Length: 199
Image (cartoon, rainbow, N blue to C red; front, side, top):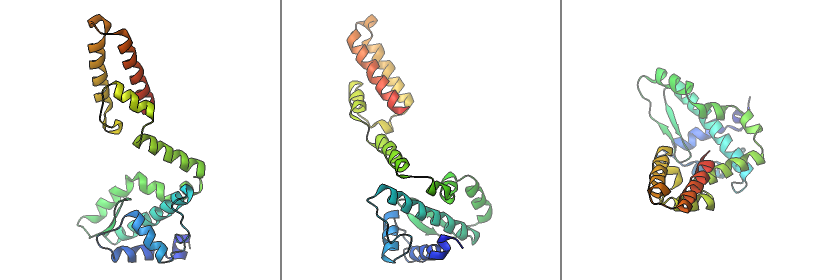
């Protein structure tokens, strides 16, 4: 018997989700599990990064296991941090779910408990820093975007659009076309900063 079976997590998850047919966010579900005194979640400290990661991992491990069980009974479960919801049964279920399970890297990640035990505080902090950098680029990158006259957020700018914009600026400000060498150097430096950050 494993820890999820010992603590009754799968049964509790199914009961909570059945009583919330519109679904719950991950945060709401964790709060309900804490209120129900679910042993794996009662001590969860969501303000501590390592505890947050472990809580998230255990929840998603349980959700993917519950989904596998439900799919065997031709039901389904939507799993995302924003919405966790039981779904009604559909037709042609067996073939569809077998294909989904074979091509689901998140399922494979969360079902492998080595990913939980091998992830320490430093790894979690590095992961969070990478996410923060993608969502909120450093000042040098913001200044480089301003230098290039780009107002849209970096994460919504494709590499192709960035290169196209850069080529237009180089063409416009090239000394051979009456532009300034200094301005061209600023453009090149800004582009180097952005491409280094994106790498």
